[in-house]
Image (spheres, rainbow, N blue to C red):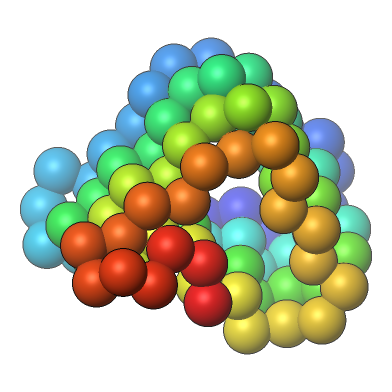
Length: 90
């Protein structure tokens, strides 16, 4: 869970390891640089519930629902989003 604004960089691939979602961004003004790493989950790989969020860095998000975005002002750039349900990014 990212619940503080700021810049974040993945230093390795991460996964939920269970039937849950993997990462939620709940703070406004977040920049997540995937640094070519991936996030995987059986549930949703990444949930974005905040505004003014930038996701980039050439990584990938794999999961039941890929990336779920429920806020305005979100930019997802130069990453892959893959879903078991053919949603990818929604």
